[in-house]
Length: 452
Image 1 (cartoon, rainbow, N blue to C red):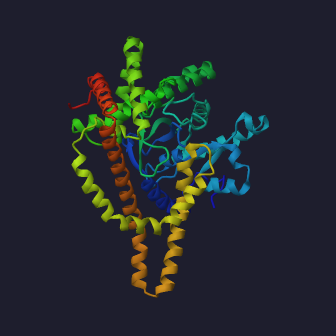
Image 2: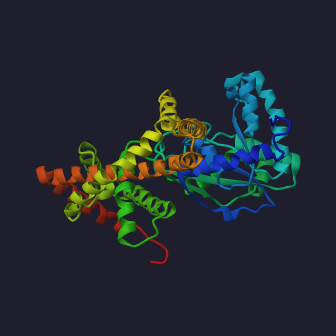
């Protein structure tokens, strides 16, 4: 088991389970990483991602590359239990002490700092979440100065190798649901040279300058919505616009492509707020009205504009779902216990941002354990190794097929709701289309895509 003293050293006992952890993580989230080419393996990096998803944010950084062993800094209160602390050290997590942990405990940061120097000298990569705690909104909050303190102190203590700070943006399509999209964007690494003269004269001012620049750089790599009052309207805009724009223009259906469009939409709406208050307020009202109708009738904003063209397909889709229902039942029943554990445990947490982290961690154990038990029971019952092996192989395949069936079922239900709305409440359906056409036309000219 790794300890505080050896946390910076590469460990085979750590790396081997890493492959399994990475595999499961990439099954839970559909990950897309942008900017890895900016990293030089011969340089020392301090990674600073935004923090929206609890433990899952650290996993996103860890799983960027399959063979590396970065060290993370986390709040010290989770290290109070010795057994828990040993597990955290094994996971390459170091404590960082704050005033709320007791003023006398701050002295322990000196010992932690010396250990971070060992990590940086080994070029393992050091990861700090500069917001300090997670938030449930696509907005960068006030950064803590811990990054600046560690970076400057490390520069004084080491001089070489030079420390490079990497702004990182994390963007989730959904914080909770499995198979959601996760975009990891690495910004341009930057050093401390522009701040050293200022640091020599007044460290506090240098800290502020560095953190202000870092905040700007992180915002460039993430979806940042400054408006708190109209946050929901901004989210509805990027939800209804980007997918349709990508489809109509034949653009790559990647999370990074959507990110580029979303950033321009947010900037356009911010500019509208600054330059034309009446148009901005009208846009917000239309977005809120669109959101209200969509929510009331449980429709998908991605389906807009709403047309009758897919109606003839509904009976065939219903027949296909009915015909493949036994496949769903088999996959669901045989994976029920493995799925039940993560859902039950995550239900104990009131903070929604912990749900994906808990489900992911519990799934690491629940699936192999239940698969082993179920396969053992089948093997002892039937005494046929070929059938038993076939059953074992059918478990993950059944899970995949059950997931795909469920996904298509919910899509079918949403289309039925839309058909029902158009038939029974044509006024609301027409209003939705008018709102969509008005909003889409208002922002279509604001999006500029390279190469078009």
